[in-house]
Image 1 (cartoon, rainbow, N blue to C red):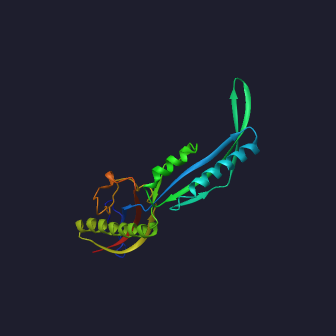
Image 2: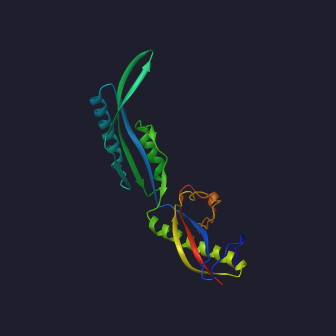
Image 3: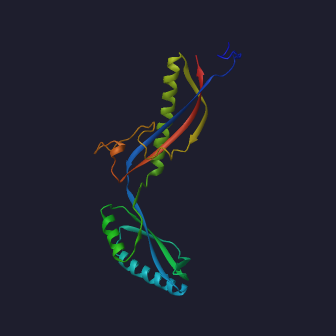
Length: 220
């Protein structure tokens, strides 16, 4: 047997097909995380440190009543800040402690954000929605991805009167570029209540993706 360029092919040669499969699962988030920083600036490093610790005491006093949230704080961070005004160089010190807040009641996000801002905090990050069942949904996305890969291989092979054999090689792919993109080759698990497509997903829904490249043996 000869290929299109005239090269000989052994009868014992293994013919293969390589395909890509992916899947993105759209799921409701069950927790939200947002961060903010308590910051103080002073020309004296000790004063900056003392001021930021005083600010954190005020924050902690307010947050102690929020039993539904998980609060984590970083170690204090110090940095120099150089100012150049009217040819007079001056230096101050910035002290910061970062907070990470995890909530399960999304209705509390706005109230808690307003509360933090009322304390003079200006560095407040937007909430990130997450799921505590990431491992479960990642496994589902990966299972669907390899099913999609085989289905694609079977469609191609059917046109050439071939059959898909055993997988010769399976390579896991980084699915990060798929997440949040509705135009990828994906299958979506829609919210059974809203029935909305990914383009119109609520802000508290997230995507979990899986992708794989598979090399299958071909059979006649």
